[in-house]
Image 1 (cartoon, helix red, strand yellow):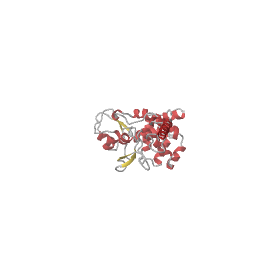
Image 2 (cartoon, rainbow, N blue to C red; image 1 turned 120 degrees about the vertical axis):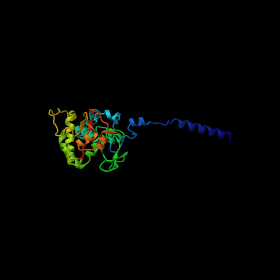
Image 3 (spheres, rainbow, N blue to C red; image 1 turned 180 degrees about the vertical axis):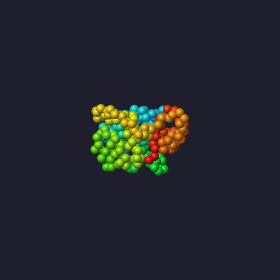
Image 4 (cartoon, rainbow, N blue to C red; image 1 turned 90 degrees about the vertical axis):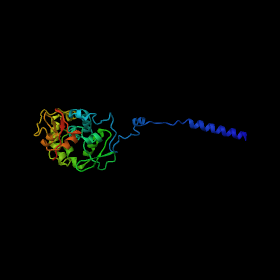
Length: 275
């Protein structure tokens, strides 16, 4: 009996040694992500590949955030999208500025949604926002760059925009007019607003950089130079500015992230008038 017990002990010891020889490999999330094994969720949608680099978030102090700041922060991203999807960077930036309220709109601040893309068949995070109707569903992104990528996919994967991709890659005027014609916007002045932004801030230079072509040497002066942005003058009131531009105080507050009617001389407001 004693011999039998000794045999059992030897067998158990040998088994323990053999198991200990196979060390369990523990992989952290960071290590796995580097090897491409997992992604913690910036994968907002299965169609959107992981985008590297520092996340792009809403401005810390939106009151001090200018259109020039927006261009600085997002021009590289717009150019990368142009390289990948053949959408002029100037158009992408102009749409981003216009539809995000220069990065200060409520939907942009809450959801990193720069292009007002609604949920449709979206499987990611969502927010609800008053637009054409009350409480409409919009896509929410952890990083603003995913909003830019989703915008590229939105245009490139829908047949109604297919004709736009036959245009020259820096034909921002053709793109601006074609977007409305294809049903992207109902505002009759939408193309003029995009063209005004592109030429006021010389956004076409970003197209030239991608295509390695010289930028246009002309500057177009739009018929309504204040149709997109307005610099506050002495004596202005939010109500007066809204009336002057055929919009509402509520819309001015919404697109410029204003909590009240206080405005300062020199402050630049994004004006988005109804059709």
